[in-house]
Length: 47
Image 1 (cartoon, rainbow, N blue to C red):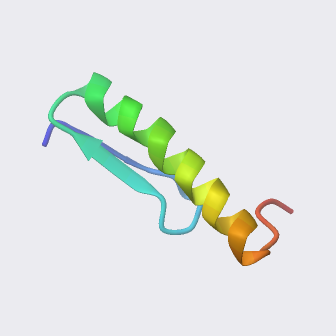
Image 2 (cartoon, rainbow, N blue to C red):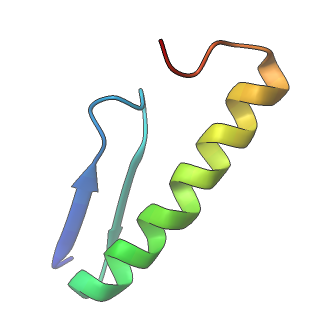
């Protein structure tokens, strides 16, 4: 694993990849999925 990202403001949100570019692309997917999950659960995402 070369790229590794964690989003401190998004609890449990992290992504990695074989390259920096792949890890960054995975972050975009994970953040979108995190937002969708928060909405489905009816939780306040951002305060």
